[in-house]
Length: 248
Image (cartoon, rainbow, N blue to C red; front, top):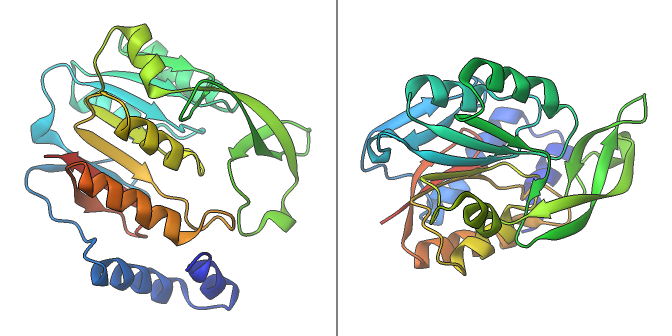
């Protein structure tokens, strides 16, 4: 199964056919969404995320990793929930301007930014860095992306911090929502959460099974272990890559 949808794309299968094929694939495996409460959609219309709004208290604490230069989700969440606080993480330099805008608008107490990657353990990690024409890293990938031959990629080492370390530093037992769009590192973070005593009632994750050295099997294994740990699927994104898991 690894790379099957990537091969469809390479063969010129139309985008909508590939999208419907993904939905049918996950539905056949019994991995469709079954919401049991109020779903709130946040973020850019073309790439939305959904959360269970009814499970948020008055002061939800969110750990959001993988911001890039798009913080539409974080901005709307802070607008909708006046008591919410977000701890944002991303090692890419292009995060600087957009995260500073959130700090300026909502204050440093409500939005904090850390220029490190979220991972399964603390330390450093070797990744692929996509470079722009000026020789600056604009994205980091944990695995090789499908069209890597057409991009300028170089090996780089970046600082990595685990959710457990963030929780200890912040003096909290967990996060009301953990959102991870971290280019292939999500599997290690899920392992970390499931093997720890962190309280994470809502988990938003984008799975990068389209990466050549990740594949579908690893994703299905993570979903299976999340379900065994008491998480259920409450929402699935348009392309069956973004999932909302809620802990029962």
